[in-house]
Image (cartoon, rainbow, N blue to C red):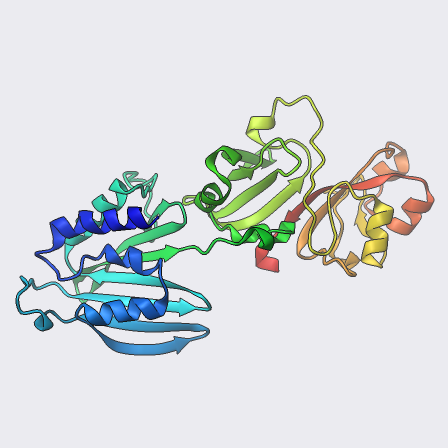
Length: 349
């Protein structure tokens, strides 16, 4: 990683040294370090702190480039600022420049070092920013207007990856907020892009971790364009992936378990005992047969997850004509229910 960052710095420095004292690509190096070291670096390289403020739980520090401190350098009329935004043990660095030529050089250097943006040449796409990704780093680039003049911004972020001991439960997978982060952490051979069919006309792009294994997890993204921001995680269930459409075998038993103990394959009696409250779920005549309703929440919060039950012996008329069913009655009636799938929603956590 260090060699990559150094080569990135060198590539831009060679073309941009005449325009500015500090190559903007060094911000990539800054976010790989600590905020304190970033501040020291900026101070030593002619950037002056002009504003420091807290907003919610984030500390923002704005630095302006002062070319007058280096009289030997060639100056241009462009203005440049750096904004550091620190929260907990991570921070972002945003570089602002009024130089269009410099902005284009930065993009070229990022691409040379492996950053990519699949839609950069797609004229039908007009996102708020073009996000370039490379392993655990992202660079979000955009152009805005400031008093009639263009301002070019590059927001750099390096994602902190969890330690192996921090990945004990299914809930912990929310720490991977993009397809690229999954590839960086688990390896390219263990992560695949696919399509997931929620319904006939509801198809979404997704990423699949450990496909066709007992550790399979489907990541559905809020930001489909950049395949980032987890919308939900899917464990178990029937084959609804495009790549698995022709599969003739039943899904492999999923091994992931939530922090509250919930897992796929769990029988209704186990679920009832774990929840310490009766389970209310949709019957065969409901739009979503087997879906556990939010009012079932006990020690397990069914608001934060869509849990669907399947039944081994529910072919009778009573089940098929029921809208809502109760675990107490069904357990006494001898029906065999088990957890077929779990969908987790981070926005509800």
